[in-house]
Image (cartoon, rainbow, N blue to C red):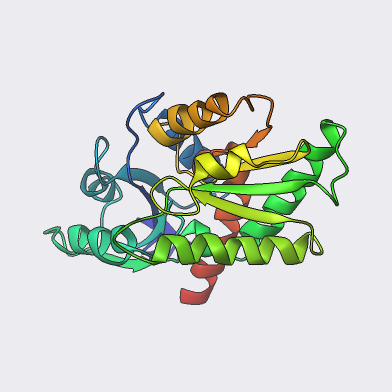
Length: 249
């Protein structure tokens, strides 16, 4: 229970940061815990917990740690696919404590992500001595053979990023569908930056992407991310949450 300046009790909004859960690489969800802590520091007075669909801590355990009242669920995903639209709501709805959950759009659909990326790309290109306006950007994502949402979200991000970069070249490659990431990496020009559009330091970001770069002889390519648990993404996430808290009063 929280109290206002007059000593009156009120039900406080809490935040659950929900992710898939890492496997492979450094897949112990430590980066997720660090990101949740960084977000919590920017949301004083609000409890912040993190949970995963696969692994520990589970989203059920995280939700229970927040107590009752309204919990805002922030999905650390890059599209509104099955995990976000079905699995997270269904598992939280099955909890017996009667908590209320309000679901925010996932990180990958936030228009601010393209602005944030454009700034990171310019800084990365400049540090490498590239011309930022001509540097090719490759968005590396998972893709899906069963749903269109992951591909659509990556394409939307690419379009938004191209606009913020005033038409500078942006492409994308997927692990699970064409255009395949291995081919996209092999075709990269000398001045290029890869955006690792993965949620953590697990299998895809720590093993698949570096392995494909090595196979193509392009270990020199600078990589931004993995975006989902990049500590510098915390202000963007906190801003989105603050806006939603303000909207629900």
